Length: 61
Image 1: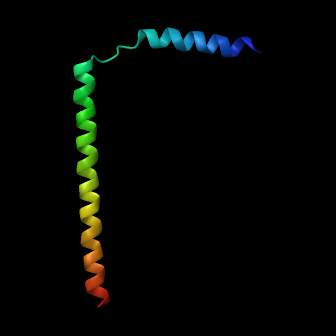
Image 2: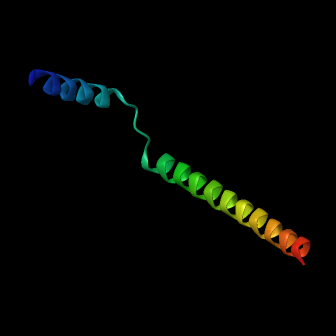
Image 3: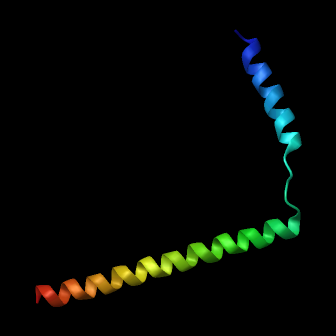
């Protein structure tokens, strides 16, 4: 039963050697895109929240 985890780890290591890892320039570019999209979505969601909060306060008054 103990051989199965070792076999799994060896197979996982072999698969990780086959992965085509991105170079530093690509990694930085893609990280920037992810951060940019995340900030844009946060601003959009925050804007909607502010808009609906203002609308609700006008309706409650």
